[in-house]
Image 1 (spheres, rainbow, N blue to C red):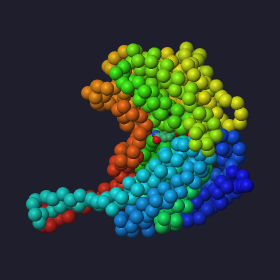
Image 2: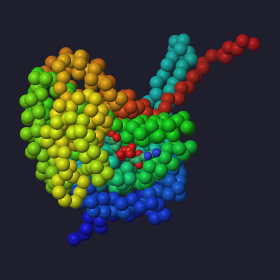
Image 3: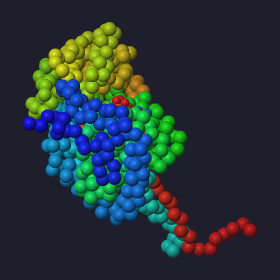
Image 4: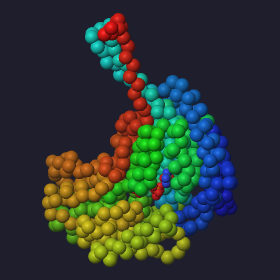
Length: 491
Ligand SMILES: NC(=O)C1=CN([C@@H]2O[C@H](COP(=O)(O)OP(=O)(O)OC[C@H]3O[C@@H](n4cnc5c(N)ncnc54)[C@H](O)[C@@H]3O)[C@@H](O)[C@H]2O)C=CC1
């Protein structure tokens, strides 16, 4: 039988101009399966020569791609979507090995979510048109606009959704006629390589979607290259600050999908089971490694006890185990470093007086496991209520009324997402209007259909992914004034 490594090891660390590329001069990237700590693939961080090759080939491919009729571009993207769906099982297994996320999740949320984006933007490609503005009636002057691609885009990804992040960035970029060089997170380098192969198989010009693997310095080199017209990052706020500043040097476009500390507000008229389900999804899906997670769970006073009891009871049913077993509902953290960071927050939570109601410890054995953790009695000033943990740690905070909870929910420098659970729809709409967040859910949490814009306000980012809104961030408008009469001049 093949070992995991024999099956998983890619033919090269990068995929450029239609082929796998290797340059062993680059620093090693050891790709570990988070469930066991086993090294499943060894890659090398891109050298300057590899980066140059990727950018030059993408630049060439962009001109070829932009010259195609939009309907032909759309067809290629839709073919990519079809292949992703046909190979969902194999791609889900790879995603599980790349990230440690349970197969139960990767089967429905990764390649399939990527396919949705490619299908949506593939369908829209042919309907990207300009506008016409008339002056002085029929036969008079007019302006028409042309929606143009930006050119060469760089995508940089976080570790939690390697396939989805690559697709959410590539699909709108390519639909608009751009090319993309994508750099995955150094801890999940595998999935985007497969996606790059599939683009070529679906008929995309070689070089249109290149993947270079590497550490932060590779991302930095891509961002500062003068040929790059746009940078889209999914990552942490500190990295976002650096990338945004670097892009400013050349006055380049950016999309920043950054971190969060989102509120999930549960009023005492909400359906208890639905609210508990949402709190579970908003904190423990992907072992809590989701930027939009509702980690500050504000519960109205009368609801605190029944909500807490039921949440703890149901969370005891979480099945921690082999991520490739379809019954498993909780996988490991991505790396031991990330687990240590989360455990440190658990310690700080206890030191600052929060009540540890469940979890907080690590199951025995290899791999980067941590139990789903619930804190009660959390107050706004506590570190665990202020900082992004990016792990399975849920904080329950109690509140008395709407005005109070709205102010407290907004008292954060982040603004990615928010959720409100109530039977009173007037209150729900009033609250979401007042919440400082880019994405809100009423009586749900963390659903992100491709038709809806996704993105943050405040420190959580700029720009939007998905929906027609993303097209604005991957294209620019040229305005063309057409005169029909003589030219007036003062002398
Ligand atoms: N808003 C969103 O859509 C999402 C946000 N995130 C955020 O991402 C974070 C976790 O992901 P990480 O991979 O740890 O984030 P990170 O910020 O450490 O790294 C993100 C990516 O940026 C690259 N990078 C690092 N330094 C760079 C530099 N100077 N220039 C260019 N690229 C550089 C990394 O190699 C990686 O590919 C969390 O804070 C989370 O909130 C994660 C998923 C979705």
